[in-house]
Amino acid sequence: MILESISYLPTSKEANESLAKHFTDLAPALTARQAAIEASRCLYCYDAPCTRICPSEIDVASFIRNIHDENINGAAVGILKQNILGGSCSRVCPTEILCEDACVRNHDAEGQPVKIGLLQRYAIDNMQLEEHPFKRFAATGKKIAVVGAGPAGLSCAHRLAMLGNDVVIYEAREKSGGLNEYGIAKYKLTDNFAQKEVDFLLEIGGITIKHGQALGVNVQLRDLHASYDAVFLGLGLGASKQMGLTGEDAPGLLAAVDYIAELRQSDDLAKLPVPSRAIVIGAGNTAIDMAVQIQRLGADEVTLVYRRGFEAMSATEHEQHIAKENQVRMRTWAQPQQVLLDDAGRVRGMRFEKTAVVNGRLSGTGETFEIAADAIFKAIGQSMDEASISDPLAKTLKRDGDKIYVDDHFRTVLPGIYAGGDCVAPGQDLTVQAVQHGKLAAHAIHQDINGLKEAA
Image (cartoon, rainbow, N blue to C red):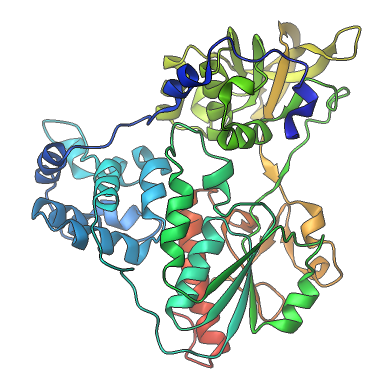
């Protein structure tokens, strides 16, 4: 069990049925009438800014017009053509800083953007297609290995299969979906949606998934490179970064992503260990997801701590608002200094040093304070799992810190090996961007291995 380090903590005081009610949809779906009214608010702009800013290049104005015209299937297919994971992205994409932020309705008398994310969800949830909307092209006879069944890998595999290639996906975990299955807050992707989306994607045909296959453990890059016409690495970032503090391995301190994964896979939320007092270290969406969920599971006091101010947090204002609505205490301008342990060597709290920007650099002020806690969850970012690139061939990949370097067509420095998603630089670590990486990489791979013209 991943949560062994906190297994000594008590479980929630509520029954599973009661806890489950805390993890229903964060944003309820639109009704048909609501969708019609919202679609009518769209101005269907020429050269629409919402479309221009969409990482996956969805024609936003077009799909909203289809909803307005009651052509739901047309709207859905328009979305899926650009983003085969459009259903999950409609739920988890930070639309408030992308398409909805760019909406021209922000600047009129109403001052409210069209609810693009909810309209996208409405189209996908209510499509009634008799068969998979995309047909495979003529068989190319080529076979590609995709490592990782997360958003980037799934997107790449689907597009390669549609173009007539055969694909084998190697996935380390028991289920496909990657971040959507294991890393997103339970209240954002409900009702087993991640697996339903995977099943839909596989209807294209030509894709085989092998689970329990971990690169660097029982699968080696050199073997894939020798056996397939191309390899796409959609590894994600599987290792949690370290804070570099003594006591970081003590019982009661663990990675937030590990707890979230257990929470998402749990059939009985009442069996999860829940601290009375919890500290979450971090400033991104994972930190917010962790803090909110442990609060909803019944923790009495949850404190999120970040070393800079609110304006520097990578979590959007929308996410920060969710945390505040769920009674999460948020302390800024403080950095971890020491893990505090009890006589049994278990976490009893953390000492922080207050921070400030001095001459343009973040510095400690020397002033400290302590927060009592029964568990500490670190959400300070993910790094490359070194085991995944441990064989001699993988070690020759050019890297930028924790990420693999690729060119404009997602080619690595090794011929025939491509990469995309969170594991490459540069990137925003967004699900929607990972989907786009996979799609564009698929086109580059297809053109390269079939001797077609240079990827556009």
